[in-house]
Image (cartoon, rainbow, N blue to C red; front, side):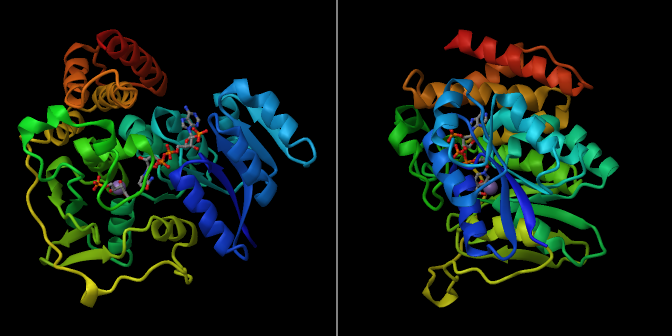
Length: 381
Ligand SMILES: NC(=O)C1=CN([C@@H]2O[C@H](COP(=O)(O)OP(=O)(O)OC[C@H]3O[C@@H](n4cnc5c(N)ncnc54)[C@H](OP(=O)(O)O)[C@@H]3O)[C@@H](O)[C@H]2O)C=CC1
Ligand SMILES: CC(=O)[C@@H](O)[C@H](O)COP(=O)(O)O
Ligand SMILES: [Mn+2]
């Protein structure tokens, strides 16, 4: 039987690559639900091609246009943020690919695991904010969470078949476009430069996050929740080629890694087909044609966001939620040309100093924290 997929964020980078995977393996997958925020034209084109049961446009202003564009198709059209959660809770799909960006992904992740569905998770912010609740709900309801994020997929693949626990996780980081930029020059960085990732073509928000290493910090928190290791057993190593996607060290000293060309379609497909590895037509990695694979320590002085994320993980409670909300507002402001590049991390630090802290928050507390921090950081711009 084919897997029926609810693809959240189908118009984005991971969303489109998921549709590439579905297109290539139409014998295995079919699309039940597609969602976008405002890009109703692309969503309509995707609905024409994949004939889902339902589509959701989160920004309600585009509902009329989308409905009109799809009037000739037997597809249900919904609008609004809550509608995304409702289609996830419904029974038209058995697997949810969460390719939403930012806080918007949290409630849908929770909805997926609460209804016992398989969750192929790209939206790392879900686990950064509410990792405890999402992992506990998945355990309670027998829902599998399959990581799509390349590092976490690599770790997951390295752990398959092992009965001994991992001793240490080593997340690799490309170092981003400013790996060799002197720290004093980071204040001059332009939007265009920050959006030029050396190895991956991704959405704007995560590309900026990679350049500040907020992305790697979030990935440390994501790894903690997915694999259950404490912060001191999760290391980060700069690997500028992005070929070794991450590694796991075991008690006997053995280190396992997953390697491949930087292409997200592999982890996306693996999350959907695990434990099988069907063929995929992407480019193969060729050792003989590759210059050396290199590794180096992170310069924590130049990239303080990584250390801040470790502190948030140690502190727990609403600290990671505060970091995420501040980062979302700051990155959006940077992309709009309203603040400088160095202001991103500065605003995260100020938000963490000033925001209320709750040590044992509920999901409702995260919603309140996200709102409070967004308001606070917006007022700082
Ligand atoms: N891109 C990549 O290679 C990787 C991405 N990830 C993670 O995957 C997630 C998606 O990243 P990426 O695909 O790059 O992001 P994009 O910005 O390319 O796509 C985001 C998707 O989410 C939709 N969306 C945005 N805001 C909202 C909202 N408020 N409510 C509902 N829908 C919304 C967008 O719709 P619209 O198009 O209408 O705006 C779009 O479909 C992120 O969490 C990222 O960190 C992880 C590893 C690699
Ligand atoms: C493809 C992927 O998983 C991204 O999260 C990637 O890891 C970003 O690269 P950085 O290592 O530069 O953050
Ligand atoms: Mn990643």
